[in-house]
Length: 497
Image 1 (spheres, rainbow, N blue to C red):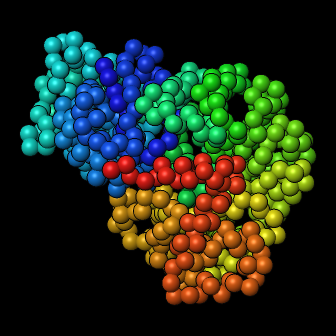
Image 2: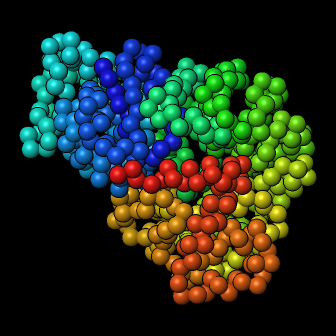
Image 3: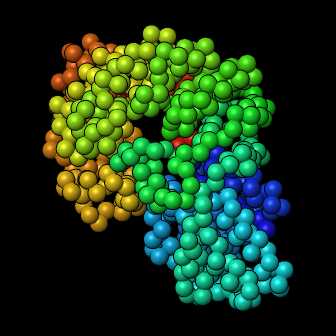
């Protein structure tokens, strides 16, 4: 069987690479198609003639799915359409809302996707080739499966499958505990999009899961969904990680820096102490990683320095400690803890990256100014700001509804496709807070500019253009990219058509 993974943005996603590896090891064919990168998306998809189309989406891609699914159905009416990713996992009602979807994956996809392809292959072997659940008038034709194969297809754990006018909602399976069993097949991207291998930034993930209950993060919702199905955080072994990084270095020949995109890279102290010395001797690239509460002391910061750490991430979110605790549930992330850990990091010559969020429920201009000044106090090297987007099916959405910041009937399709330049929450003096966010990078990087020009935020016009400049310089400095490559990165966000 042949599956084509379809995604929105022009990036090599580790999750899709892992799925592709599982599919190909099981004897099936896999390709990837990036909609934003294709001028003739529908004709390219039709020419590929896939048996299955696997669409991956986050909640920020919901509007894109709404626009793209009809195009997929029009070009490949006979294909079986499976939607996976974070959004289908936390919002399984997706299959009820979109009749053009044959199945969704709720949870990890490596095992269920292979089982789905096996079931469809068994159907083909039984003399049937039509697998689409489309009803007449929906862009396809109904399928007639042998009873045995129909039962197999509709009983795969982690999948909710539409078949014969009914949705079969199968139970979840245990979480994958040994991530070494699912190596990435990132070559799936480089065959069609070789420019992705030119990146000087090699992004890699070692783990899945995060134990902290941050209200704005999908992990708190996932922890509720997966409760009792396995350990919250799982991590690849040191040997496997080194081996996989070495293989990726053969593709990323221009790599100058590694970005470890784990939510909490430093969470497992003993693993880090085993991994970093080997990374230094066998890989040797400067790296960027993330910290958590009480993960950094003198021993750890010395190890980071000696291993070539370029930057450590600390999720400050807001300079108001009380609201950080009440609104975001980051009680362990106190001002005192940030001062202690960041002080240690800075003392070893390691840079600090710190994200923050603006226009959140109950935020005031005073809170926003406090965030700027707290970053001054901490001497943050790479200040990043975004707008809070209260995605439905997360706890922050419930808080936002309770505070009157968003309507209760807000859907993911109503939200902006990114959190960089557009806010959604209704709060008093929103324009002022938005302008603080637009100027945040320059306010933090240049304290004198903040001191003399903070009055700009009270102008009755949005200062969004300045935000674009700040985003560009932040991205270039933090990810250690040349300006030309930064422009190339930003260019990926355009539509190819």
